Image (cartoon, rainbow over all chains, first blue to last red):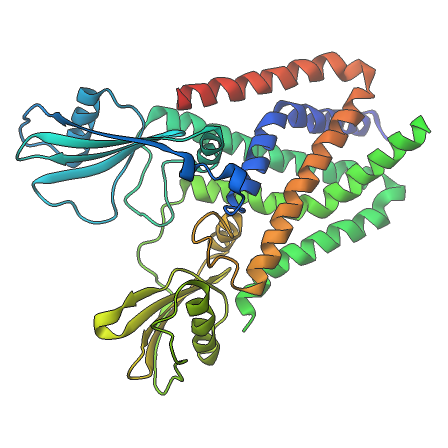
Length: 213
Length: 208
């Protein structure tokens, strides 16, 4: 006969499992569907980049004194009314120019500023709803391929916290499911087979492929 | 009939959930690495070696896209490497091809001197977290024309897709199982709506 304490733990563990699942339901659907789309760039109906709207314009800039690249970029953004995550090119900037992008899901601005002439050429790229969804999946302000990239927009941080929360929620759901399964004695054997199959396949890809010649 | 549907759904939810759970853990844990880890600039565990008398397949310089990747595959297998070949950078003036090869646990770059038939091979062993983050991003949207040129990348793509479909099944069956619990309907519904509003609110703030 299970004790009151273990019954209570079991009850709250089950509640935690479906409460988390229900709270994060739409987040999970968003990241699942966009994950699928990111893995299939050849699917035409989601090919947002081909259907982007691109406009270009030039504008004079106010002359500024010596500023750091980041401060100057912020000044230019303020002058142009742009908001978003700053993305720097991987290459070093020449002294008389400042090139950067201002990104938010669905809207990208590429700014190319001539610091001698005090003029900026701006390329504005707008993408459709598929593009917005895809960009939400990867919008973290960091890039594996660009060590210089770091988060600099408060709303990016909010979005990253949301992604972290979904990941943490998913971890809790998985571990709560292990506990629920463990408590179901008649289901242990079949469950162990299913779990072992998943672990073996996943471990093969995460660890085994590294050893493969 | 109704009871049987409930029991079947509950059992499938349990077994499919257990099977897919390691994949979910992989994707969930790697989120923290992708969102917060600073990419490594230098490679402390890199090794490099020069290999002479490499048999360079004819026409590798002139070939494009997947054909070039297939020919590069012959070169990397001679060098004892395996993995997904990424975008190959050509340096025609020096008759060189720079071939990046990636797989979980290993990143390699083969600098092939076509005319001399020599290659400089740099290999870096990646950390476990980097492997998970690589799997999370693999195969991804880039280099669509050549992507999936390694059999295990294609297999992982199939598994990643399957994970999505199984998550959809788990969430829908989960909704059904929750809806059967009358006492939990109100709280669950409030949480579901709160979650939807949270997502809509944050996404709107970031997009608009």
